[in-house]
Length: 392
Image 1 (cartoon, rainbow, N blue to C red):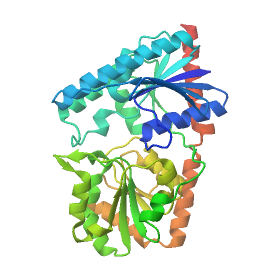
Image 2: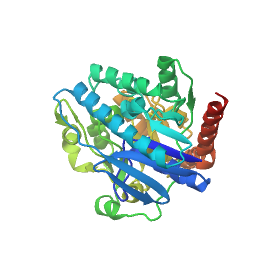
Image 3: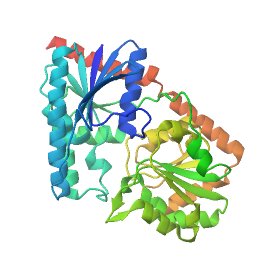
Image 4: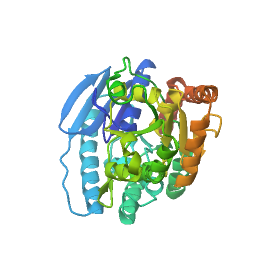
């Protein structure tokens, strides 16, 4: 089977990236191992074509404009991206014997798809639930984003999501059945680079957050108890790894440093790192703190559990799909800094043996995300869609 993935982004070798591009890469590598042929078209800095690890990759160069208003920026730039990507999809379909197309829901880019090949939509997020705190985007922007995502679903024969919360919310609003297929995990790093760990963290005990530094990921929740945690645990550092955003004109790096108060010298903030450099930092952390206000079965949680780390995630934000409290990790209340601090103190107080047992159980949960299980379900979904198309 030949599958064409249409994406807003795709990782470049040796450079950091976010969860969704990593998903596309991992699925593509697994499909190759199962005898299928993935093709990828993604937005990028310039028009290009390359082959990596047996995957054909086209990028469509995008130049974005600033219109002065957040909602207008989103509408025009997302529409431009979707239109240009779909034009490239049409070109590829003319040349390649594509069996099925898979779009991401991000930015509603499937709205412009008019191809004769059946398409499926993966909900990489749903703005209505993901940005419902209205801290990063305005209420009007969130409403527009969600509407564009729903419009994109009209162009697709089937919709699926990695997490139950996203599937239920989107399915209810679209009045469509949304299947749940969890995100596959495949550690494709062949050799680790310890340079950042050795430079900043050797012989230091630390709690870790990694991911984009913005409100929906719970950065403000951590900031509110950062000084209290560090004052109570003088042997600990707190490490943040990820690209930063700002809130009300204040950047999150500045916010974290300010909130750490007298303990600011034990807060270490690094820019986003490629997996080769990030994974050693995860592996040597004492525990991982991911108090997202809402999420979509995040890769950060999956990666930390794979490396047998204790993860503190948010109950009701999709982490409960992976974490059973006190068995495979710890769950805290959404947006509740006090409860997060309590769970962090619980992680601090755990014995080495307790952490090892919980870490091993976490790793066993991630075993269920191996491609032979999750990607097999995805292939079955493709086959179901194609079979329905033949019967029409």
